[in-house]
Each structure stands twice: as structure tokens, then as C-alpha cells.
Image (cartoon, rainbow, N blue to C red; front, side):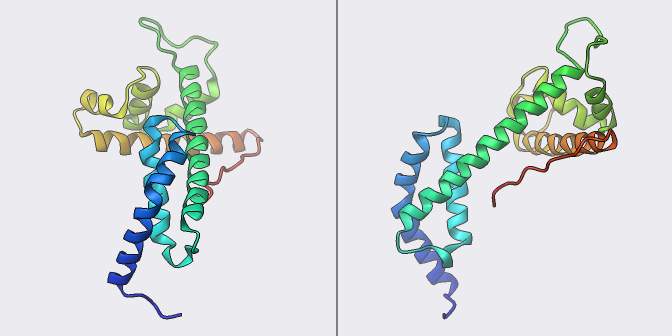
Length: 180
């Protein structure tokens, strides 16, 4: 098989993307929250670009299959965020004037204490105060993009520290895969 030039790859991508964008958008819109539609579509088009040489003649069906996998990834990510938020709420509930009680999960508190203070703060703003990244940005005096990146990294560091803590306690850790 002869390798395509960059211009040929781009032309082929643009042709296929024009064909698949609306069918994939409709497919995703029927299955996901409106806020997630563009993200899943973007990830699908990125996969199209990366795997352009593997795209079959039935490119609409192929793209819908990729979108289905991206929806599953988004669902797993949402579940991980929810679990993390619940863990953080358990260690430091949003009480107005009190310290965490004895009922707070000691393991989660210990893991949060191992994080750098900026990571712990961004997680608390997100979990306790239920701020969105753009609101966290205002609170911290940074850009919304920087806040989103910090939150993403802090969640990852918390999850990694949690797995280490659980493994140290004799629990077997399970690593979730992204499906890519």
C-alpha cells in the first residue's frame, strides 16, 4: 500500500468527516447529555484522523462504532468522578463551621493529606463547594483552562494515591482501562 501525502490524507479526512459528522452527532445526542455531545463527537473525529488508514468503506457505521466506545469512556469517566467526589465528601464534608467528624473516612482523609496543598484545594473546591472549573478559575485567579487541567491532574493524583493506600492495606487494586 502506498502512503498518502499529507494533502491527500487531509482531503480524505475532510470528505469522510463531512459524511459522518451529522449522523454521529445525532447518534450521540440520543444517548448522552447535551453537554457531552461535542466532546464525544470531537473524540470520534480525532480517532478518525488517527486511524484514517483503517477506516472501511462503511465509514458512517465505523464512526458510530467509535462514538459508541467514546460514550462508554465518557460514562466510565463520569462514574470515576462521582466515586472521587463521594470519597472527598466523606473526608471533609461541606459543613459551615465544624471540623470533620470521627465518622469521616480516615483512609480518604489520609490520602487527601498526602496530596500537595494546591491539589487538595482544587479537589475541595470541586467536591465540597461544587464549583465548575470555570468557577474554580475565578476562585483561584487562574484561567478556566488551567483550572480544568489542575482538576484533572489532581483527580488523577488522588486516584493514584488511593490505589497505593488500598494496596498497602492489603486490598487488591483494579485499574480501569480507557478502551483506547
